[in-house]
Length: 317
Ligand code: AKB
Image (tube, rainbow, N blue to C red; front, side, top):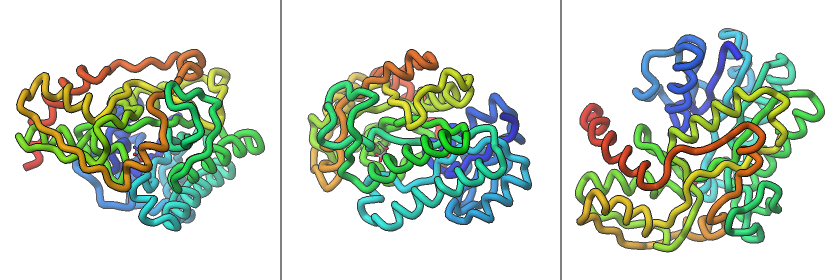
C-alpha cells in the first residue's frame, strides 16, 4: 500500500479515516475524494471531486495518482436509503462494482469496503449476533450490504481481488456530523446536551443497538487493511463490536457530566429499522483472526466527546 484513494471522504467516517491514514502513509499519499466539495476537516492534503458512479472518472484518478488501494466509503445510509430505494441500490451497487472492476483490471493491491450490522434482519439472533447468522435484512440498505458482501467474496474468489470489509455498528464521532443513518441520534444527542437543550429522540428509550466510537472504528479499519493476507479469513465481511446501549443509557451517561440533561422519545419510521437490527454483536472472528479489540466504553466515549466537542464548535463558528 503506497497510494490510497478514499471515496466518500467528506463523510463522518471518511474525514477521520483520511486523517488516520495520512498519519501513517503521509498526507500526499492519501487522496480524499467526494461528490461534495471538500470539507474543512480534511485539511490541506490532495482532494478530488468524484461521483463513484462515474467509472471513467474513477479510473482517471487511479491513473493520475498511481493508486494501489481504494477505501470505498461512498454510500447512502439506512434512513436515507428507505426514502430513495432506487438511488440506494444504484449508488451502493454501481459504486462498489466500479471499484471492484478497476481493482481487478489494474491489479490493485487492496480494496476496503464497509458493510454494516444492517445485513442482519429480524430472524437473526438479537443478542451477540454471530458472524455466520442468516443475513435476511428488511431494509434496502441491508439488501445492498448483503449483495455487496457477496460481490466482495466473489471478486476475491474468482479474480483474486484482495478486498476486505467490516460490518460496522453505528459510528459515533464528534468531528463531522453523520448523514441519513438510523444510529445518528447518538451523535446529535451530544450537540443538544452541550447546547443546554433537551433532546427529542427518534428511537424508543429501550431500543438497544451496537455502536462504536470513531477512533475505535478508524483503528479497526486500519488494522484490517494492514493485516497480512493469511490472517484475513472472512471475505464477506467481519462482525466488529465495541459498545451496545439504548437511548436511555446514553442519556444517563451524559447526565453523569451534565446533570440536568433531558431526553424525550418520539419514535418515527427509523424505529422499525432499528428494531430489525441486532442489540449486540459477536466479533470473536475479528478478535482471533487479526487481534481486534476496542478501547472505548460508553462513559469513556462520552467524556472524550464532551471534552473535545466544545473546542471544535468554537473554531468552526
Ligand atoms: C446507519 O444507521 O445506517 C449506519 C449503519 C448502522 O450502518 N450507521
